[in-house]
Length: 338
Image: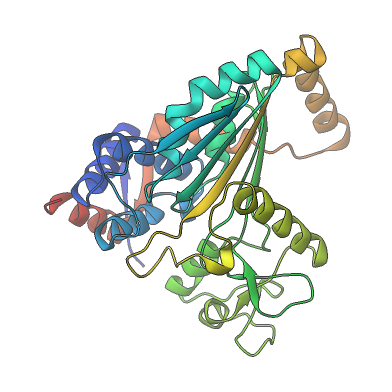
């Protein structure tokens, strides 16, 4: 079994930025992408954390990400921001639009940001959480490529894992944060199981012949299953309409792979921001805090977001432990010319 290397949070950020820059990312692209991936790692989301950084570095080198792309952002209506990542990353377009999106939500009560022609958006909760930190309620949706997930009634891939995220401010504690894929599990979890030679649970995937499988390699050659059967398939379809239909991005069926080739998957991102003060009249974060404490204490309910925040705080204090072979690989990306 491989050993581990523990990095201080700031050192992990520096390594990620250097690896991305050396692979071809411009300064701002490297900065925002490193922030999102290292935060995911700190929150315990290893599949979309530093292991996923390898995917980004390879995509930059192979041309699936244009590391120098300058996103275009239009304002077709006061509460709408429409971005084109131009083959880069949606994170950059979103960061550049965040102040305007926040101001529009405060002015209009609701605002929407969309982005097309981007790379995979990794941990989708990152986008929603940025708005919750500003006191807004947010929902985000993204599709991907290639198609990996069966639709309702199908044994062939129609959608990507099509995650959606929701975040809301909570007084005195981290934001409520729900971040989940439409599939029974994220693709990266199956890829990690394959790398480790571990089986996957039943109900996650079918093999290429449409038979249930616990073999991650067979699953990767076959099709992922939606969570909850038809219900999860319906959610994946809803996400596809929001993230690809409304934005003009590639449908997952048409998107090039984010893992191979030299073309961007060209997928979409949809983010909606709501001003709770405009809707509720003030005190929303306090009301939500009281409600969450009530259902936790009296009903034993699990409230998403707190455990991720606790892990992130621990990582900032104690450092981030990653496998030694991953650390060596990231050093390799960082140490070569870009």
